[in-house]
Amino acid sequence: MSNADNRHPPRRPFGTRRVIVLSDTDTADSADMLGDQAGQQGPVIAETHAFERGEAIAHQNLTEIDAVVAALSRAFSIPADIWVPFPLEDLGLEQHVRRLDLALKSHGRALLLGNRLVPCPPDGDSAIDRAPRAEVHAVNDLCHAALAATAVQTLYAEIQQVISTTAAVIPEDDTDSSTWLPRLEAEHGPDPRIPPPTALWYRRRPA
Image (tube, rainbow, N blue to C red; front, side, top):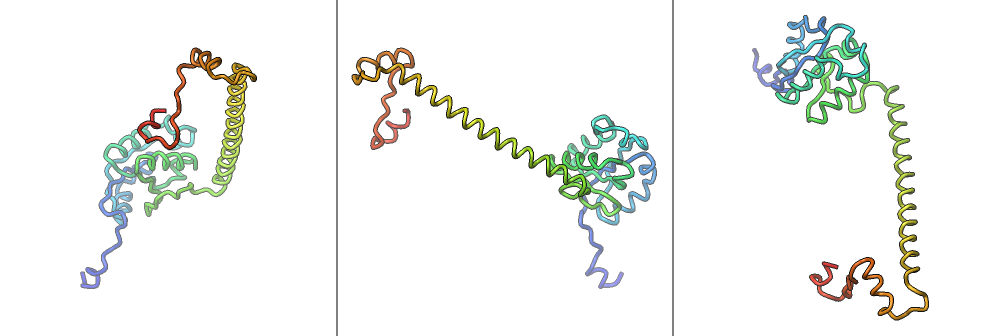
């Protein structure tokens, strides 16, 4: 190897990171090819978990695929990232890719795709699929805002009701606190006697 080669070694963006291969059985049978592809990028294949061909696309829920659950479990415990060499061919559904990616990210791991082990895009890899998800988020935000406004109105109404109820207990022409204060204390407890704002903090804090 020349000095120039020593100065410019092959780029290995992943260092010695370990990866778990997740694929169907046909892809898993090409272990030598997968090892070469991983080696060119840097990672070392720690394990391989394979499901039957067509099994992923036949299920809407990844929890129904034992190999996927086992690969995730190992990725969390080793820890390691998961590499899907042929995501669309093996997993079949974009939602599988997205959910697998989110599950891994929630534990600080990554989903790597394709023969170059590219990290899964933050919003998945389908613009068509991202559009309805954005609409769902927008609708949820609108509903949450409406519910928050309703809660404020409800709270305001409850406060008004409490004020009205308290006012009904105190006769309008009764300005002597010695008459109605004992009734309030009997119903609601002793008067807290809120200290003046100029009092020291240790006196105001309990109130």
